[in-house]
Amino acid sequence: MTERSAPCFSEVSELLRAFPRWTLFIHQKADGDAVGSASALFEAGALLGRRVRWMGPDASLPLPYRFLPHTDEYLFREELAFDDTGELYVFLDCANVERSVKDFTAPAPGVRVLNIDHHEDNTLFGTTNCVDPGSSSTSELVFRILRAGGWPLSRGIAQSLYVGIWTDSGGFTFSNASPETHRLVAELIELGVEPDVVDDEINQTRTPAGVALWGRAFSHVRVFGPENVFALGWLGPEDFKAVGAEASDTEGLPGSLMKIHGVRLAVFLTELSPAQIKASFRSRGGIFPAAEVARSFGGGGHPRAAGATLTGDLAGYLETIPKLLEDRYAEWAPAD
Image (tube, rainbow, N blue to C red; front, side, top):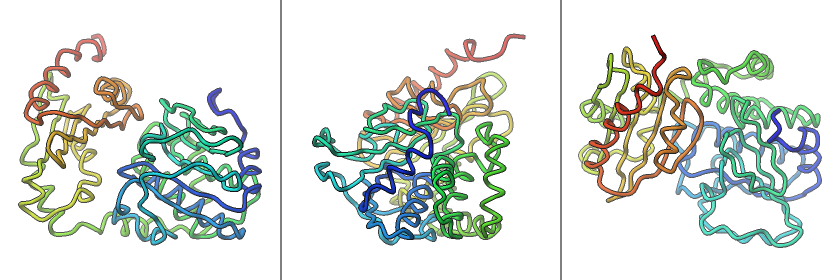
């Protein structure tokens, strides 16, 4: 673990065991790692008789991950008072507390907040922080915590952890999937995970409306820059309305632009409401840093997958983002 990861895994395990009640939080627009890590930790707590709650700022969880244990017990909650000293508040995969809780106020004296995450820009907001940017995923960290503490590991826990690691490592294709990550995944498979079943559950969930939405998205894609290294795509409210699709139907869409030959950095903009735009950034290798581009817009994330929330006119961003990327190409591109 890095220097930013204050406690060791066994210490975090002991902290979890010390509390009879947990509340788990995940970030807005939850991905497979957020859902997988929370599902696994919920199951681990339930097996040891803990009373566990799981909540987040979205009305529901993305459809592809609802097959995981305890997803039917997820609660929509934007605000919560952190005032119960008998409860452990656990944030999973949240680089900052604002991604999960609206109008967060400092915990009352004696209240414990556990922050488990792997984002490089984590603000270390917990009273206990287990943050390792070198980890493939928060799910990998949860696995290490449970294993260090000798927790019972069910097939359900293994499946949830596998989903988190698999999705956040790009199907084990990203550089964050280390040899140790693969060894941990082998353990999960030995615990009963069936990779083909997981793939079917996640990738066979497209609705006709979702497929139609992807078609509209691809019709908006623009490839540009020297040797077409950049791709920009977008969707507006009219696209969702035209086909009857939902925001969750965009899951996986930004990454699909990276499948275009020659593209090294992709940006996808989704305007879900007037002047409110979700920006997703994906990159390949270490040349074009997705996280650095995201930070230019007040966002953040991982070197190869990052995001930001933009305010303003979509048409304006469709003009300014290509100019920004082309202006910075010389800075990022390797010298001949």
